[in-house]
Image (cartoon, rainbow, N blue to C red; front, side):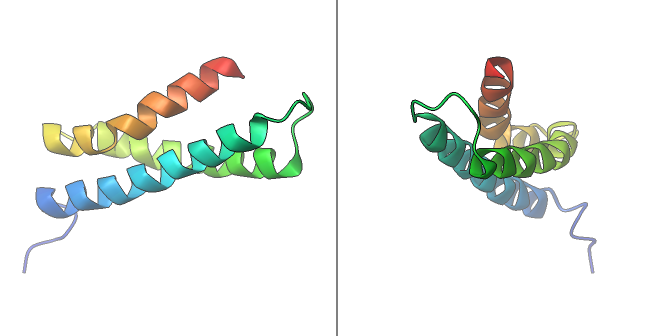
Length: 87
């Protein structure tokens, strides 16, 4: 039996799941921040903490030797860099 972490198809699918979670968290953060209140709410701080946690794991996918694995998390990392640059 093959180790699932060395199976590139499995890692690509896992990367897409992590990417989807991260993109949805960033969308939620953007929706909460559209309010006129410049002070960050507890919800937005909690979402940013969750995004940070996902970003650390996502960088491991991005560092994978297979291009498909790196590509599976690209959308989240792009959005993460954009949100980080606005903070």
